Length: 46
Figure 1 (spheres, rainbow, N blue to C red):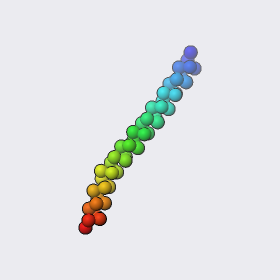
Figure 2: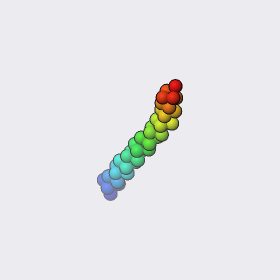
Figure 3: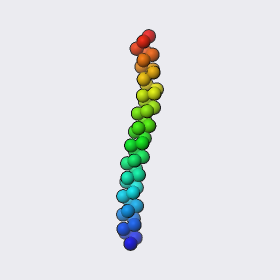
Figure 4: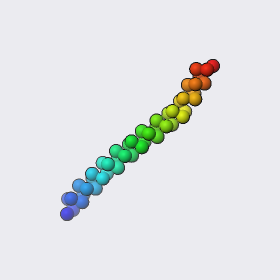
């Protein structure tokens, strides 16, 4: 019982970490586009 529970927790943890990783990547992409884009446009237009 204990082994099955820990295995289940481990699987959930992996899923959680993957989801968290994906979220962080999305967040980084959003920050990158919102900060880098205007800066790039400003440099390109000047």
